[in-house]
Image (cartoon, rainbow, N blue to C red; front, top):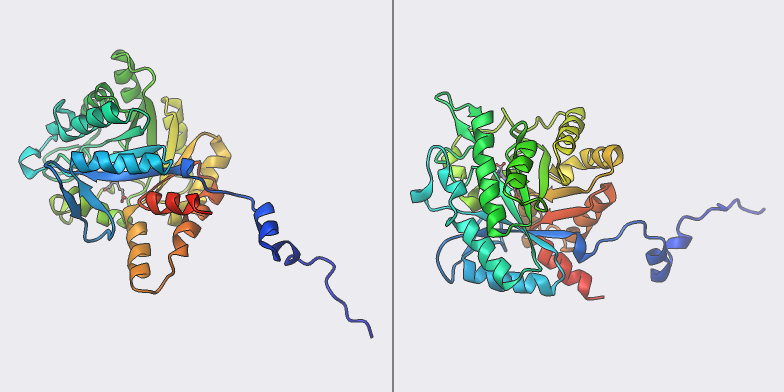
Length: 331
Ligand code: PBG
């Protein structure tokens, strides 16, 4: 008697490599990648970050070398994050808008040497405050919104004047995108873009980053629950994104990445604007420690990035940018 075989065999399209490539729905290219880089004062500094194996804090001479490599790999942009000497930290983080500060000098130097590399400057005070909060605090430690926004305006102006292409406020103060837009326009920086960290959650996945920029000790047992979003919320992310777009954001971001891909999908479907995703330090650390222990194969790196694209990301800030671009180059 004839056995009943399935008429539809899903495995047919998966049989050959050519066919798998042909039916592939999403793709990853170096154009999708933004590399976050940590910087420090000094020369010939390449300080390893213990909680992020393979990542370093670079002095500006080393940063130049790094950028040359990134350009050769086809990576379109970098995001700069400074580790500031304790001597330059203060209660109100004034060094954030020092025209001769580390970030301003880094941007000037890179723009002189490699003008084609896109440079993203973070908008937040945490690398500069003695308490490690992203803004200016009152006597109870509460982060004050409006005076923080005024500081962020100055920070954005200094970064733009130094040559930054994109200002990326990561502070989660209310109204900061509109205020930064106004501050930039007032000084003629009408084409400086704003990448808003719109749906930024109060996440424990940021731990290694705080080691890298040196804000972990300052923050101590503190948290950012009064300004970053509750991981339990999803509709609220759409509200945040809507506000940032109405205030003039050119691109929006969801952060962290992998545990928040439902948010990425909703944001992209609802608004259809350029939507970036930050695969954060903790996600990087999880992968690297597992790979280094032999528990996972390196293939998880590309899988993780592809999954972020599939969810709707137009671009990904990832500490894996170099590895990924290298792999994408070799067929
Ligand atoms: C701070 C900032 C953080 C990150 C980017 N900008 C940490 C925080 O909010 O405490 C996290 C990035 C990462 O974990 O890789 N404004």
